[in-house]
Length: 455
Ligand SMILES: [Zn+2]
Image (cartoon, rainbow, N blue to C red):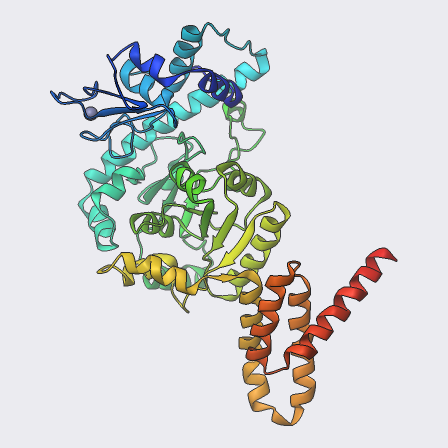
């Protein structure tokens, strides 16, 4: 597939009037400020096909063309229409549109062209593998039963292109005999796979204990594609020789539309968390695939239009550290961080299962448990020092001083005075210290810090 830079793709789209483009293929009838027609993607006598001029989008109410409910025509912009009507790939749709608008195609320098050709070849290679993995899964009763038993439906399997791995391709032989999660880039191109063992956690732990005792390598829960060493001749034909998960967010190709609309993203730890959350209406969920949030991933969130990010990391020590790291990264890009603390021992996937019978309750639960990062930090200090204070009443004065130092540090990072006032009130109640004394200490702390910076 010919590959053109995103800027060019967006430029053409901004130049094109979707009504003019669709009119080339379908006779449109004006209705208000929009247009209707009999749908070109299914047989019908009464028009269900709509074109919206304000949003420059199209859609069919009957067959779902222009939405993810449709099997092939899944995006509602001018490219989605062209790919569907011309049965072509994105590169060809761009060429058609450039020709239609009389815009010259960009000339690529040879190195850029070589890289783009490689990338296009890689995506095709991945798409073929994805199809095979899906076929494998459909023919594997045991793997299907495993997914059904874990609450995934055929719709989930098709939407997320879940599969079952084999060792046919050199790059993806790590997925052999594992459930395959397909990894998409920001635009929805397939770029890699991760294989998850089907062993239940307790069986896996038991097996690994045994392997360790025998001095053998343990079984890893998730395995990515193998990375190719630079001295491998195979390396030069790879656009992603060492696939870096840190450049992608799983689920982003679907979540980005919702993130743009809601201005908010939800970050979780794992693949299954994302799939389950989407199913329960949290369609702005993405995951970092087991890593801490990177700069590149944060930029993807910004690009998708996230102004707020809700972190739903695991409630263990590692999860809490990840939350703090995420918050630091997000703040540095102007994104506000919120936390939904996970109940002990549960991940978002389990949480969804708890709401199986009343899915809309999940959103209500999330709303109720949502906190700002400062609130979450205050509660954490309280929780972590509660026992100490309770059992060491004789040292209460000193312990109280110590924890108040932490509290003041958290509060001093809050810049907005109204917000700060709310947190001081909450801290006053939580730690049983007067509002005035906390306020005085925060003021002193802030004053000293300014002094330090100025000096
Ligand atoms: Zn239709």
